[in-house]
Image 1 (cartoon, rainbow, N blue to C red):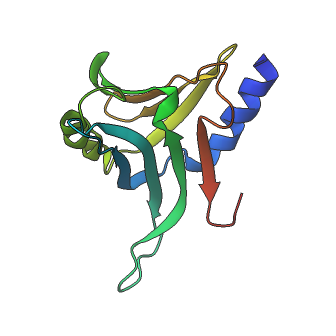
Image 2: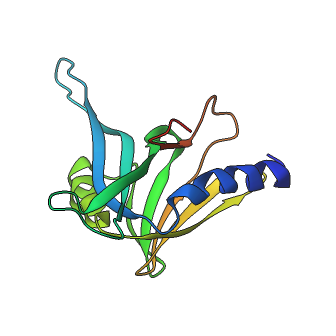
Length: 149
């Protein structure tokens, strides 16, 4: 990944800057084998909303978009420089920590070449780090908006 590639990825995430996490969705995979039943963290979805300037009777927010991240590339949630949870931690720990992101506002995103390591920086000193392996095929994280971009 070149510096230009990193800047392009960072630019794509700007649509979510200033928006709040409305919902955290986790996909946990369960495997069933004879004598062994592994559980693995598979995907993370963060739905972002922002308050309406003039709230309506029922609707008070509008959806901005979402961030999707595969756990295959490695993810780590930190606060104040302290690791809260990583994608290889126990499912119980993952289920305890990631929901605490609800209500957090995304301030900025930093994409670092050459590997594309990405830090999603939220208020309250909360950081979601993504560590894509250079040999990984496909996207490590994707931002989508309601208009399909």
